[in-house]
Image (cartoon, rainbow, N blue to C red; front, side):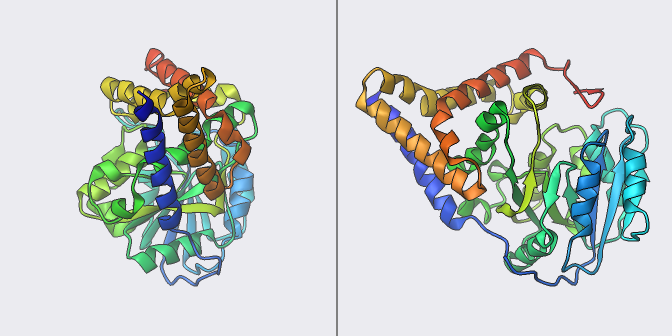
Length: 358
């Protein structure tokens, strides 16, 4: 048992250190892109986000052939009116009023597919409403794609966390793949098991997207980003996650209730079913909670395991520009995450998100 308390955290720390070295980063310069690019933004009841989003999109530089399609996904608030007012006079922007959601589709993939069909650009970029881009974000990401000859790229935004629940849970997003996925191998592989992505900010060649059938390939997937990348990998395309913390920020939630329901709709499918969820829970307990419990009871191996996992979290926090001191609360983060995982299964099929049951 003493070996297990140390070995797993040590392996996670080792992989995190390797990934810190190999993790790709966009240029700090403003490269000029000659590609035609359409940015697709799905919007449903985003009145609190849409104005700030559009303002950040208007400031994009380095991409002369850039246009934006904002897909209004049957919003029931004043999102359409705010879009109209915000894009007035800027010919790069257009609003597309989405059709009614057909059976078998989820809202985001359907909105994106409608936008894709309306686009004639060489490159497709998808951006969520709660993302804010630095002025050179799209140009730098396109440059990184071209330099590495990638078909797709997922620049991982800095995750903004202000409430206690966000600070406990949101840093786990990046840490989970920083600690477990060998990125150097993943970017050269077409094995779907190595799929890492964040749909908050995503770039892909239009031709590659068309070859997998567009967003129809993920029409009913809650974890649309991961499944999209799995389709690309199965088809033989290459890409990678990148450190996007210097070019993009995202605050997914602003309260415990939002975070609880947001994870409630996705965690039960994040690990591939019941057995996968049980396996993930055991992994999280063994690597992040049990060493801490043993440390509290005076076991040196437990203390070493806890220190190693905190160091892994610290490195991930440095990479993503999140709060370093929150890493010491990793055992509490795991407890909350396990609660969210259990609740996601308990409430499956009953959680409402933006007026729709998921």
